[in-house]
Image 1 (cartoon, rainbow, N blue to C red):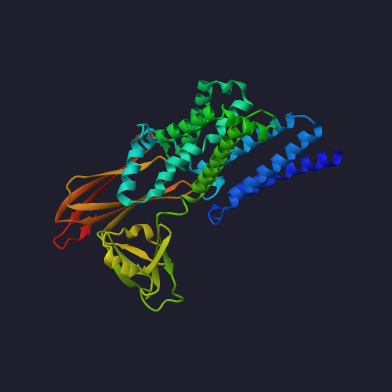
Image 2: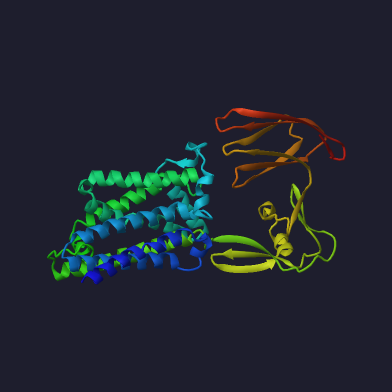
Length: 417
């Protein structure tokens, strides 16, 4: 019996190590299989068996309650991982992106406004997978409805439970907001709280008694009919939770519309090759590789591959600036380029044109080390002279630096600055 007890404890301790292993894997590994969820299921299963054996051979139900607290900790770990930490390329990079500027402007505090917008998009695009965002937000907090009242006595009170759930949901939304791993949306809080509260009431019935018998080893008397319906509901809940976890892991990776460029050329065959232009840029291949560069489109997991130059002939409104890569494509400005580079999040550049004889296209690049680059391409519209005033504005809304450019456009629409 002593050896059996030691083996149960060893099983419990060893089952926790895969959690840390999963947490520090590259994000792309989560999206290739269900390994993330499967490991969590296996961990919980081994924990359950370990605590159940300890409780049986020690003849003490307290071990089952210890297990319940560990399950709760694992659930919180999974909850914050899926909703915040694992939405970045690596969890350790998460807090390098913290931003506290313009918080109110990046928050949705109008109930159901985002839901209405989402439904309108679904009706327009016929892409119903986006509705799983709502379903996921309803189901993801269900475990709280069971854990909280059984671990903390005060949580048996409906109002206290609801307040706790709302605070947990707000904490997730706020972390998403400041780490740029999501947005603060009042709709998410409503769905989280509604789902948790409904199941809080459900777990006060025989469904909760069945769970108590399984997870806590309590021998509560319930009829066969109640047991049948309770187990059926539990199966639905478990399947829904697994589906919710699967959706949270795969939603970002299984992009509805994803574009990438493929370069199949092995060597340069000559000079640069012009192949496309828009209002502000001319685009070139660095050598004669127009028949070797493809665009691959993943639309609802249906992959289409087409020559990039052929694709652009049919999609004149396509924004190439998002695909510029100096190894495959480079963009040559058709006008005068004005650039600003500085460190620190929260800053932005504003500009004002005195006489609109030119137009300006703006792009911004933000690196992980807080280096921000603003690029402005000035292209002429007509002959004349104008002044463009650029202001670099800090997080408090104050102007840190001002630069003034006097621009002349001649008869041939050439710019002089």
